[in-house]
Image (tube, one colour):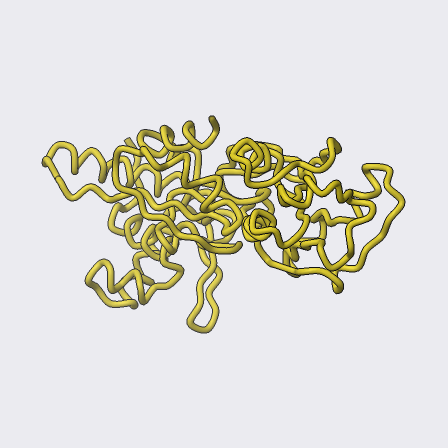
Length: 287
């Protein structure tokens, strides 16, 4: 069994995970120079450059990413086996990172009865899964995470929703005042999001409205909440809209549903990491 020097592999894994020789040294209880030396030994062993080195910064090369992905999984498995055999009761809770738009209305009902500890982080993309100890990222699309393992959760569509009172007053979308439309601004990192004018076009309604005339929010969940409070009409994910309609909090105003261009995904560091308890959690999210 030919193996690389294991101390070098540990130093490399800690450096890749933390993004710093200094942070890796703090974790391992050695100096940053010692960590750097161990990483160079590993580079000599494989004959590959594993990091690009800059001023106070390191980044994995393509070869480093491949070696890190597999070696981190192997070290994690060894650590889990060690904890199991030694009866280690200090079990680390899973960490879930989720988009703000999915946190309360989509994620919360699915994990409410999860039997073990979870840490939940609500944040925008991108996040550093390895460096920040995140086990799974629930987000829209996978374009921020090209070197990670991706599990598709759902391909959603958006439908127009109105407050229940507005719907009962027989106000339709083609006559609703522009001030009553709620617009979701996805931010400057997305160019493929859908807005009201996209929906009007898909529904065959000749109308164009200005986002500047209505309410603008940065969170789709907040747009639904405002609709439930009677503030106006919003575009909502169809699944969430049906739940709110059954509860009598709003009404779906039109049958036209426009599919989003990307699926919602669960992102993990690698396929091997998505095993055991984490795999069971992903199965729950897929249901």
